[in-house]
Length: 553
Image 1 (cartoon, one colour):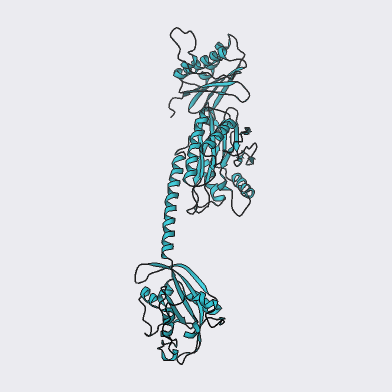
Image 2: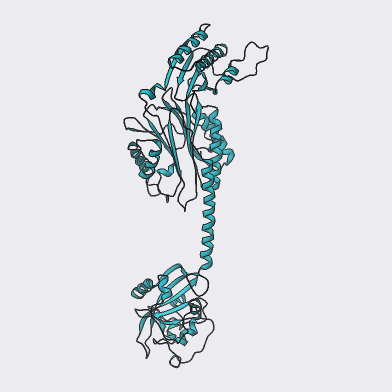
C-alpha cells in the first residue's frame, strides 16, 4: 500500500510497480480492508493539514497503537483507535495538541528528535506504559515520514510511531528472573549451610576464611574450605572449587567436603587424601571435575605438607615480608582419574602466613590469570595483620564487590610469633630411645622430670607419665628401633607422642581377664582426652595421646 496516496511519504522511498516500496512495507503495517477511495481533497483533514480520514483508512484498523506527529514540536497529526483506547486520546478531527505526555513519560521525545534530524528509524525497547487499562510494555519504533503540503500546512517532516505490545514477553522474562533468583537463593543457602559455620581454631595457628557468592546475575558455584584438627598439634586445611554452578555444584561440594573430613581422620599423607577424593568424585558424577588443595601443618616440624589437584598455588608471607608462591607439585583435578598426585613440604614457622584461595579471586574475563596472581602476590605482601583482616583486605585489593561475577573463597592461616610469658606456654622436649629393658624406665623418668619443670598439677603429671610408659612399652613389644619420646605442651593441652620404625598401626583391643598383655592402648584411650596413630612420611609410625590442661576449654 502506497503511503504517499494519503499524504505520507517515507524519505528516500522509491515507487516500484505502483505499489509500496520495501521501506513503506517495513515501516507501517498494511490496513485491513480497502476502505473508501474518494478524492483526498474531499475528505476531512486534521488541524495540521493531514488528511485524517485517509490516514485512518490505512492505519485505523491496525491493532497496534500508532501515532503520527509533525514538525519540531511534535504536534499530533493522527492517532488510530488502538492508540486512543490505550491512552484515552482524542478522536480524529478533534483539536490537535502538542507534546504527547504519554510518550514523554516513556522517554520517547528525545528519540523522536533524533529521528527527525537524522532521517533514520530508531527503536526503544520494552518500555512500561501506564494506559487507561492494565500496565503494559511496548517496543516503540519511530520512522521518519514526509508529510506532503496541503492548503492548511506546508510540507513537513514528521514521525510515525508504531508501538508493539511486548507485555507477555516482559512478564515471562520477569517470572524467569524471579525463578532464577529463587534458585540462586536456594543454592546460596545450600552452599553456606555446607560450609563450616565456625572454623576450628588450632592451638598453634590462627585461621580465618571468607566466602562471597557471585553477583545476582551469576549462579552460585561450588567453592569450599575447611579446617580440621588432626591431633598431636597437627592441623589439616583444605580449599576446593567444583566446576559448574547452581545447586548441583553446591551439592557435590558438600559431598566432597564431608569426604575430606572423613579421610583426614585417617591421618593420611595429603596426596593419598587427594587420590581417595579423585575416585569419589568420579563415583559422584563422572561429568564433574573439581580442583582442590589439601595441606597439613605440623608445629613440631615447623612445616606445611601439601598436595594440589589442579588448584591455585599457596602464597606464603614470611616474617620479613617476602612472599613465596608455592605451586609445585600439582596434579590433575579431581574426577579425572589421574592418580598421579604427590606431596610437597615447605617451611612454615612462627611469623609466617599462608593464603589459599579459589580462582574467582584472581581470574578475570578480560585479563590473563597470571596478572591476577601477580596482583594477589602484591596484596599478600602488604597485608600483614590478623587472618580475618587479611581476608577483607584481599577482597578490596582485588576489586571483589557484591557484583563480582564469580564465587570467591579465601582461607588464611598464620603461625603467630610468641615471646615472653606466652612463649612459656608452648614448649617441647624429646628423648631418643635405643630400645631394651631400660627404655621404659628412662621414658618414665624423663616424662616425670619434664612435666614437673612445666609445673603441671600432680594428677596431670601422673597421667602423662603413665601414658608415656604405656606407649613406650607398646612400641617395645610391637615396634622396632629407632624409637623416640616427645612431650609437647600448648596453652590448652599436653601431648605425649612415641615414634618407632614399624608401620603397623596399633588398635584398641578388648583384653580378657586372663590376658597378661594387650591393655596398653586401652589404658591410654581411657585416661587420655584423645589418642591416635599415623604413619610417618620417612617410614615408621607415631602414636600419641592428648590431655586437656586444667581450666582450658
